[in-house]
Length: 147
Image (tube, rainbow, N blue to C red; front, side, top):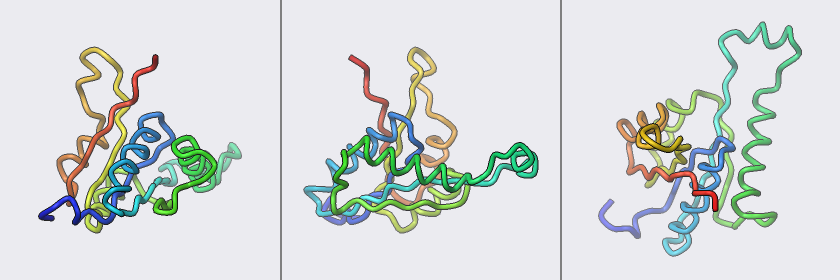
């Protein structure tokens, strides 16, 4: 990538947090002047003790992840999703899935849920892994301050 105009695909990790809503907004702010596509990507997986969840009547992890993805996009953009924004729901752990998705992305944008004080200086495990191992540049967006 030699210039900003080479950015055509921005992948955003979405988990329903306020940080991921802000990450979507920031990605769109970058994408519009570059005529880039924004891919809002949410991950889901079956817990290792899946049988226990089924016995308790807790199932449809993919359905809930899809709902969270849709809700996050609405929080970020309102009822009218911009034409350059697409959503994608992928089965897998976020760390591994986003590292793999970064192979075809020009920029990866992640939200970070800071906890204030010293803890606010640290990145979470997914953000840290992606900053270290992604195949494209990574932008980490902080949760907006409440006013």
